[in-house]
Length: 207
Ligand code: MD3
Ligand code: FE
Image 1 (cartoon, rainbow, N blue to C red):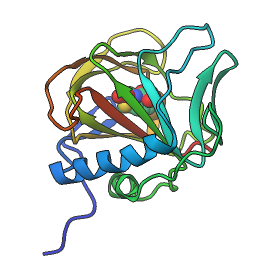
Image 2 (image 1 turned 180 degrees about the horizontal axis):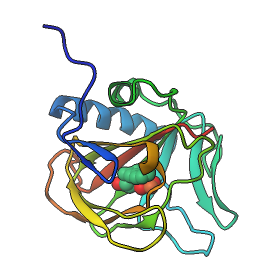
Image 3 (image 1 turned 90 degrees about the vertical axis):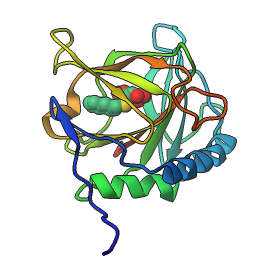
């Protein structure tokens, strides 16, 4: 029996495919180790919105382009805000994309979001990418997070689900442009990150 390479979602919520427990503890540790190297080359920064508000989530990126936000607005760019290129997307991370989005183009951007105890992310759409036919893949690591999914326009009824370390989400098709956010994390719910908190990776075809 060979190791299964393609995965099936455990549940689908409003078109978002959730693969619960897809990553083994060993795979999660390997990804976190690889992210330490990413953060050494491309340190986490605190983005500022175009309205001048600091976001509570800290971010960095890997890949040809990274997502940045400052008073000039949101965009993907080839350099870290402090200068220099982004490090390559680790193989341990690209392997997850291959398992859950085998037909898609290769990702050229991996956004790394770090949530300390009180960090959150308001409801928004991901629409800075060039090709909405390509999926977005999210990997949850560390503490549990309450993920909220809404509609194709702001407002209306929403549904929530707790994301746990090792869970993977795939946003494709009609779900690609749905509003979504993170209401809160559950501090102390995972021992993966020695200092606590949560890391979310979002793999994208940005260009
Ligand atoms: C649904 N991140 O970085 S990941 C983001 O947990 C972002 O850090 C959240 O939203 C986080 O933009 C949620 C799950 C996710 C990511 C992208 C999506 C859900 C999505 C794009 C479209 C629809
Ligand atoms: Fe998003």
